[in-house]
Length: 479
Image (cartoon, rainbow, N blue to C red; front, side, top):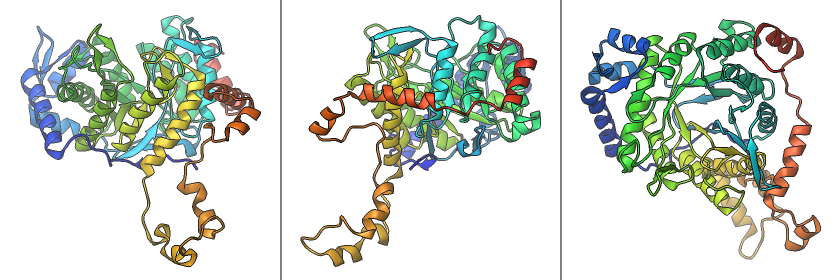
């Protein structure tokens, strides 16, 4: 049973009063402190929209009513489409989806215990794998092809995704020409620019720099993305005690302001732009100021971020599911499960990084995608909750069976057994004797077999005529 788009929201780390306090503090910062904008184009756009601009310090301040006027222009729902309609996801409210993420530089191989630089072929391989994992709902481009020059990265990363999975493809972008190439490529695949706007099967990411800063590159990149009408996520990554106050509440305020900077700019550029409020907020190891990907505080911060998104009626790009472990061990499992579960139960819409990432988000592992697919299946079952009605309470059946009876052969059992209980595809539930007879394989060894099976049976590449047209019209693609 595939579960996606279920309503979360049962976990609320913030009270309604706390949500309002975070909002009021964020608005005061936008009005009284402001934020630094290093893109000349973005600075000009903010000024034209009525912001107070200190050009010497590149500081932008907006009155609270103007800030909220821009925020409410943004759509409360954003549809991210797949090449196949079955893979469409609708972000907003408390609907929950989970998928990949990163821009990892390395690939880890558990059979050797070694990692190596990621290549474009690795990205294609991962796309084929994710295409066959039902609990991973979207494909956020997870690796960086180290062998390519920077000017070829954008178009090749997106083509690798689009050519190897029917799920929605999102990715960070690095150059203005890359943005143009990716949009043109997507228009060819869609059939026209208008069809792409109607069914956007690609989206992009434009990050803010915590604290309170929009750098020149991402400010410039956000302009053509918003003008194109392509969905864009505007996440921020404040780190407790480093680029934000050490308290979780202080971090949440910085994250809120930093992401709203991007949200507001998109609406100035093109009112109604499908934009996604976002967080990659986490804690810091204060012994060496290292970024932490697997802390429980990351889960809490992103769950709280979901509540802020729901307050602003914006779709939410959340972060969870990572681990700081270097191997596929118990730490890898419990860190990934904890943060994904907290985000999902809070109703985070788009939980990225929820599969495949390890070692402070620097490394991916194919076997971990399969393991995380299993974790996410359990997470989504938890989001589904317990249905209570006359049928599930089963009074008539209990009365019929009576004291000392059993329910094994009941029609009610057959009807609910596959939907009421999560059916694992990877976990081992055999007796020791059965497990040993099958080779006594560990979780990662079973996952490795599943990786090979899925990739070998993959058949969801782009239709050949469209693929040929893309390769002939878009320069720089490594076919």
